[in-house]
Length: 104
Image 1 (cartoon, one colour):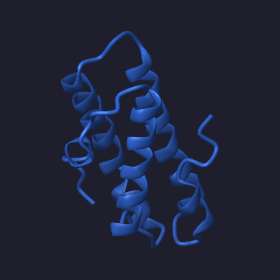
Image 2 (tube, helix red, strand yellow):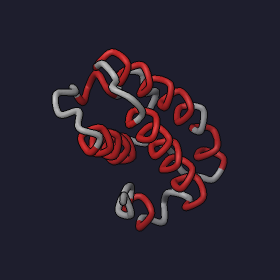
Image 3 (tube, one colour):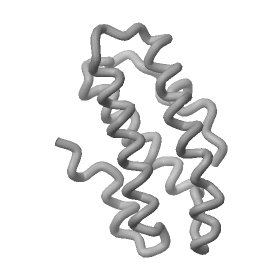
């Protein structure tokens, strides 16, 4: 369903594929959680925050491999999270609030 999710990061040799795959899995897990039952916007933002905590924890792993969660990665990850939220039918979610607790 989301084969192209984070594709620009996969295509860019700067980002280690194994870590991009892990970020993608976190986003797909987020999607599965928001699909279950009807969630309020508050629930969506809470689940997004938990997802971003897991991604934030990966920052040192990227740095260990001479990479990073830079501004470009931030844009791709935020876009991917917004894509899955909209796919789940939540069209009124604010992007900035969705990724508010990112540390990259």
